[in-house]
Image (tube, rainbow, N blue to C red; front, side):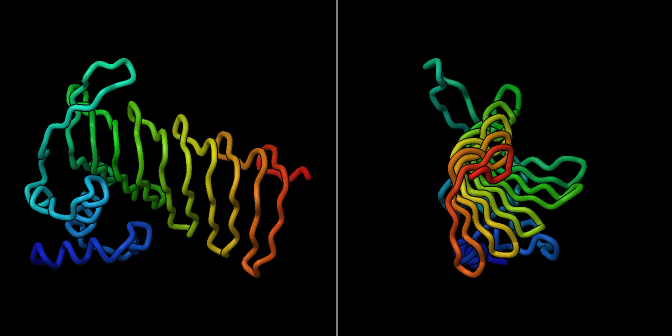
Length: 188
């Protein structure tokens, strides 16, 4: 596949729309993931070499500079991470895309802090579920939107990956119900 075709493939697809169960072209997935991470679809050259390809300096909360590198990492189970890591430890940190294929299929695009999902992100699973919102400590936490395979959608608060606080449920037929949730259950 030429670089032009890879760029077109990337620009015309959302990562959560890729059929992960039947996709056999890892190169295309990685090129697309790289374009989402860096904002430039022209990084497919790095995919062909399968090695790190750049250093970036970012300010940390303490004001000290820390060195981040953009990497492609595949573990022994076949899971793939494309994104920023701490240079010294290679821990996921910054923006990245993670494809989990071991156990159940899941795709995460978003922010990482010290190896844990933290900040804004989008997670989609093989079950058809899509969560777009805030993460804290690797869990859905804060404001977000959860879409289920059947078309049901919840917009509102989350705590520890459960619906919590004020929220709006929209049914597939368009019916909408606003209410409060505690421990994933509607309470009024």
